[in-house]
Image (cartoon, rainbow, N blue to C red; front, side, top):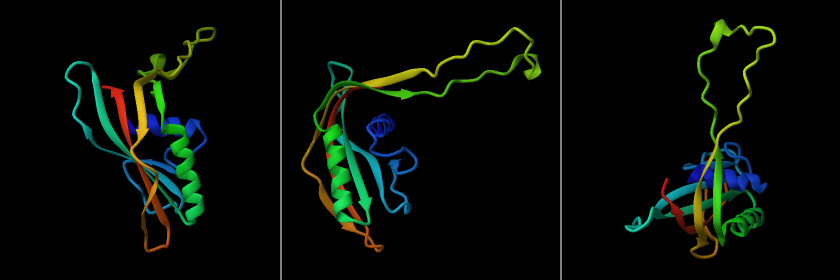
Length: 154
């Protein structure tokens, strides 16, 4: 779930996964970043292949105004998102090379596109408005907002 939502936010120019969007952790650096965390939601459904996880989005920044603007953009992108399949591009699995890695002239293997898979999200809804979590020892502000999600089980 975190990878799909992180990738979705990256496609909306919110940030870059691994650079300033982090999944399941908030590293000490960079100062200005986003962290996505899963938390317990409601129990899985018994009558269809659905689940109800929780998502917490944290934004840290040296500037309160910049943090508030960034978390506002995230709210705009996620709150009310419905009936979307959020894709993840999987890395292609490479087999061993034939002919010791040498290709014969005129014979080239067809290029394969990365496989696109994803999860169907029926609804992502904010549980409230963004609020301040803390200021750390480096005087960086950290804001957060929680979301409830209805999605198909992986």
